[in-house]
Amino acid sequence: MNTATTRGTTRRKVFAIAAGGAALGLGVTATLAAWTDTEWVFGGNGAGGPGVGTSTFSVEQNTVAPFTTAGDWVNEPDNPGGEIVFGPDALDLTPGDTVYAAVALRAAPDSIAGDVELQAAVPAAGVTTNDAAGLLFDALNVRVATDSVAFTCDATAFAAGATATLIADGPLATTGGSASQSLVAEAGSTQVYCFEISLPDPLTLAPGTTIDDYMGLTVAPAWEFQAES
Image (cartoon, rainbow, N blue to C red):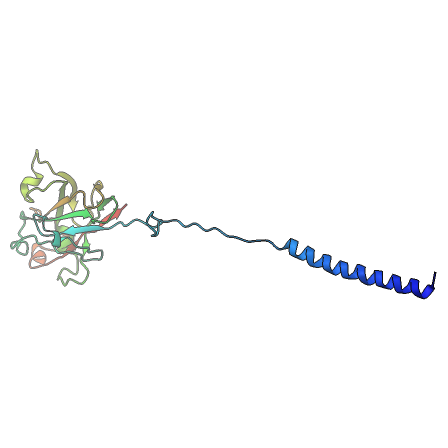
């Protein structure tokens, strides 16, 4: 066999194998390629909107008896809060006098249910008084009666057989509610609180004072209702 011919033939076979290998390589690359796809889901409300969130808890107050006007329900989250008026004689107390004022609470129309508990009185923020030494504030007594139905806020609310529940009875500066009250969600219930303020007779005088030191004083007690859903 001609050596030159043999070499040429061998060279052509090598080229053919190389070319075939290149073609095979392209084939392998095409085989490894694949279709891709993704799927997503989200927490919705069944109508295309968000389906996960937080509830709303908010307590409203109404200081305008009989607490039936929708526009009288407001939020007052900071001291001093809404104003309750103890009547025209409340600034002219003498030992033995008693005055009354009421407020109603409810869960807001868009709120979940919760509980509220009355705290002891503190001086109202931003209200000018002339009882810097706290003589009158410490001398006054408070009683609070509450019910989930409307009632007259006067001495009858504290009389024997009254339907309202007594939750506070003692010195103004240290007496809070003895129990919590439940508020139904979405303004489903109203809790009425009747405050009674009295100046004791006889008046217990602080050391080093006389009865004259208690005359002409003014105070502005503020109460917090701590609420929890």
